[in-house]
Image (cartoon, rainbow, N blue to C red):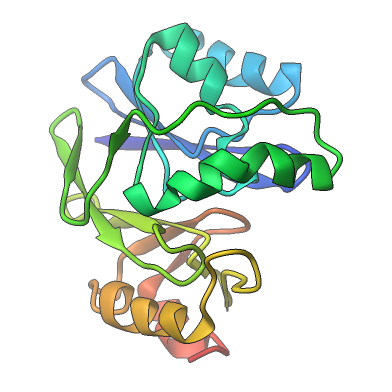
Length: 212
């Protein structure tokens, strides 16, 4: 059985997701947003308590709130920093954006490898497929596991809302098109795990999201 633990982190209340399978001891961390010392300790305590080994990092996108913890986990666990290639410029400028928001951050490492649309990320016996959903940022990805019936949407689709499009790389019309054509085609019962806020389902968003 696939397991998901949500950590609400940093001043932006960003959702980081730790994913693992019951019968396997390997875990994947999506959007490592740890900023304060206790947030790193919280994630590592959870790993230790559940006898999990962190074996993968992946990012839906690379705005500052979603990558604050990446350098630590990348270096401490010798894991590659992975996201869509179009997020490279955001990574390069992330420390400048952090300073605008009063965060004490250093320049971030460049992406070690790229996740292309259609690429598969394995967690135990489960497979997550990368879906390109540009509009919040040009390289925004969602990660969909058909078997488990879940999709991690980053900041593309929220419960009752969508991602902001006034940041660099944002495009409102493109985001609406991406969601309609790449996310709303998923089975309606698919659970939606967003980058901020509460979870939802595709059916709920189709029925009541005011942007559609």
